[in-house]
Every structure is written in C-alpha cells, then in structure tokens.
Image (cartoon, rainbow, N blue to C red; front, top):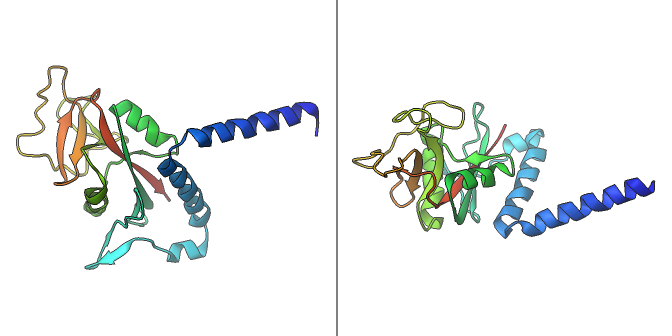
Length: 197
C-alpha cells in the first residue's frame, strides 16, 4: 500500500468514526438494521421472514425500540419507521431522515397509516411531522413524490392555514392519529420511513 493510499484509508476510517460518534443511539441502531434489511432483501429466506405482528388478520407495527417494520408488499416493499424525539423544523427533520436514504413518513395506503399510528401511539410524546405538504399549491396536499396525499385524516376545522406566515406542512397527533396543518418553520418531533424493495 502506498503512503497516499494509507493516508486516504486513515482519513476514511476517521471520517466514518466521527460520523458514527455523532449519531444518537437510535440512529446507529437504525443504520445497522437498514444495512441488515438491505443485505437480506435479496435472499430467499428474507422473503419468508416477516417481523410484523399478525393481529386480526392485519399486519401491524412491532415496537422493538423507536423502530417498527410494516407492510411488506409487492408495490411498496418493506417499510421501516423510526420515531425521532428531537424537535426540528420540517426541513431539518426531512434532512435527518434522508441521511440514511429515507424520508419523512407519508403512508401510501390505510395499512401503512394504521401501522404507523399503532407504532407512534405508545412512543411519541408530541406531534410529529409527516412528509405531506401544500407548499406548491395551497390546499393540495402531496407527498414527496408529488402525489396527492393517500390519507386525508385532518382534525375538524383543519386544514385552516391559520398562521400569519401560512401552514404548509402536516403534523400527526399520535394519540388520535389526526392531522393538522402547521408552519414548516415550527419545531416538531418526526417519524421517518425507509422503504426497502
């Protein structure tokens, strides 16, 4: 190995160690679980393994820590949810989710919505940002793919865009599962989703 290669290798190791040290414990655990899930996704045994609970014939989220898995299906793949307790504005919350290849949660069907709600209810201590927003067109709530929001479960009288600076982002109240429009600059907890095909 040349001196340049050794220096590059040492810098890479140091950078990786600094990055891992900067992560909180739940983020480190998520990174490990995502790596394991991605490795297993291609194997035949992975198709048989399903860590979701079966209750009344429906798949629901399994709470093992602040992480839950849901809804392995052909269209959307396996969905892993991560609850982030640290309050952040929406942009920072979304960037935090994207660090590991995910996004803010945006359920694409009722099964995912129910699983996410069942996961959040016992662990979340406050409202959480979702990926739904009407930033481009007022009143047209879309997800990160620019598709209409699959779930439209707003509280009565919402969305109302009541704040003086507007309310273009969506939060979920975990205890009720209801949505509210809120200012994107406000700080909330968040729920990330990671889709593994």
